[in-house]
Length: 237
Image 1: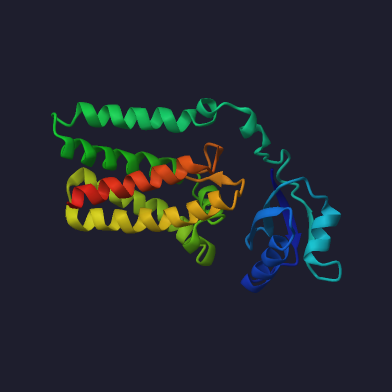
Image 2: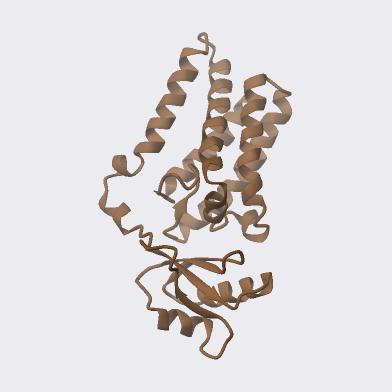
């Protein structure tokens, strides 16, 4: 389950790092993201932790005080995801992937290479579109697991534009060699954080479709990233 809280007293990145490290030391906290702007904390936990338990994790004798996030009237829980079937859970992703695949096949003129190029263009354009619908929400979710976004939060705001640029590059045929290499590097690096999150069994939201859909982070996300790396690598050959 994932809940959002307010943490009063965080005034700098040092405070953010300190509170986050304290929360992650709790055995029932699987993931935690502390956000300086708005003094927020989004915590994924194995069981519901009371405010008193969370405050003890941060420290009783500290300036940091945790409380319910009054702006979040309905705590986001991912428990419901496990009750849904696999198809129901990933319905938005399956429909979008099927749509992209169908359009790519219809416009490929029978050429496998052209079909892959159209698929890559459509993939990046569509996925960046959903991320840009709620850029702040995507950046918040993305830095829960992406290694670079954890260190440099601004990268979460830049990443959708990288995907948009890649989509336009594939669509317009701009320097395929460089475009494919960038895809391999960007998607390959992104998959590292995804793989770590899945192996650590962190129950966090996948940000592949931005903050519009509540998709859980599973091996499906790993496959998605690695397929794009494989396709870009194939086009390089």
